[in-house]
Amino acid sequence: QVQLVESGGGLVQPGGSLRLSCAASGSIRSINDMAWYRQAPGKQREWIARITSGGSTNYADSVKGRFTISRDNAKNTVYLQMNSLKPEDTAVYSCNAAVRRTDWVLRDYWGQGTQVTVSS
Image (cartoon, rainbow, N blue to C red; front, side, top):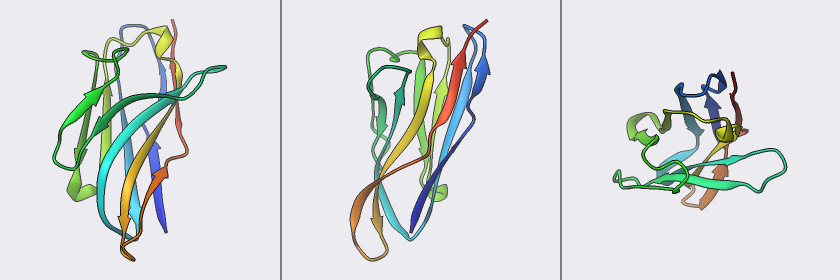
């Protein structure tokens, strides 16, 4: 009924940049908070950024000042601009959205994840 699809991952050198996108589609009435998480090999999933429907943002200390979350409500899409990337940013990045469906049910949805590898 609702799908989230990420794109934009890949291999980048330390100090480089990437921009991730996550597009929601399906039986959507509205979307509340949208967020990005990441999971590195052997580690627990980590929350990194959140944006409300009104555009207020919060960031984990590990990415503050380097990553920027934004959204286009008309496109049901959230973005993550990642600058000054470090090898420790290597992980699978996943988006999350609190979706109000057309049947009025409110629930969280997750994308399938996109790999980001920071290496020289």
